[in-house]
Image (cartoon, rainbow, N blue to C red; front, top):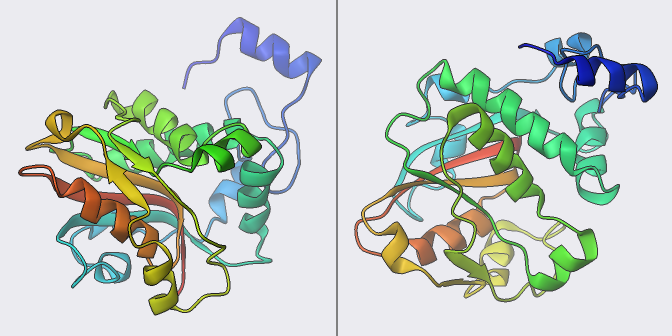
Length: 232
């Protein structure tokens, strides 16, 4: 990846830290240093996108074309620091850079073939106002930079978020997000293959609820991509 003079100069003036270990990044590194990148707990699901443990979480809920995540996520694991800073320490650039890294890796496996557009999972306006950004949209920006795919940001709206899903069982999560989304631009997505983008997939309940709403438009096909996946 080519590095501009201004990027190199900025790295001298204000060194960028690795999102996991905090060590200084070199001018041609994005988000992660080489060592942390090497030790990511990768899923490699982009190699079998139509049938893998992540895709199976959606089977019986909606017709998923393909699904993959970059790495396995566990609380307290080193990679959890990346997610925490990305979501709660106002570090949207981590999401954008990780989206780019993920897309470059997955494009080599033809994961994005036939995808028409990216749809980041929306937040409620209150949540986005409080955080200042939507981390899923920032991920999509990085993916778009690497692939050239357009981002459809306003085709579906998050209309409510009743409570945190962190400690809920799978059936409770599904009930919690019932009617959480509203399709607002069906004509824009009709007969398109959409890639739903999220940061972390746990049970898949939120993605499923959003996919159900998107599928109200004619001929929509849905695939799913997330940065992290919790182990079942």
